[in-house]
Length: 145
Image (cartoon, rainbow, N blue to C red):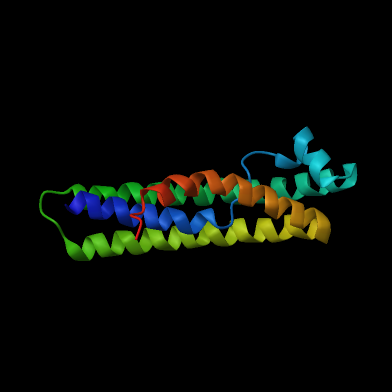
């Protein structure tokens, strides 16, 4: 039961970081995205610059999240549970996730500033379409009234 609760906590914390995520990789270099958003070469270079400036921070912050997650799992897996130690480990994980989220949000904001309003609207539509298939299985599992 305790492992199940820990898994739920870790999953919920992971979900907070998902809000700021853009498609994986260098999406501004994908021909389909370039075409759909009508990105200029200058915009692609500016987006690349935003990514390059954020990448070292994101790598370090992701590593901190991973370390904190491992530490929390280690505390929960101990035969004798120490609620205070579990709580401290959970707070460290939450803090690490918050820092990662903040940096991702700054990168998203900087990338958004490169796009004009019409490009951003098309990007939002693309992101919404990426998230819909993930939501469908959850919606199908819901009991119908």
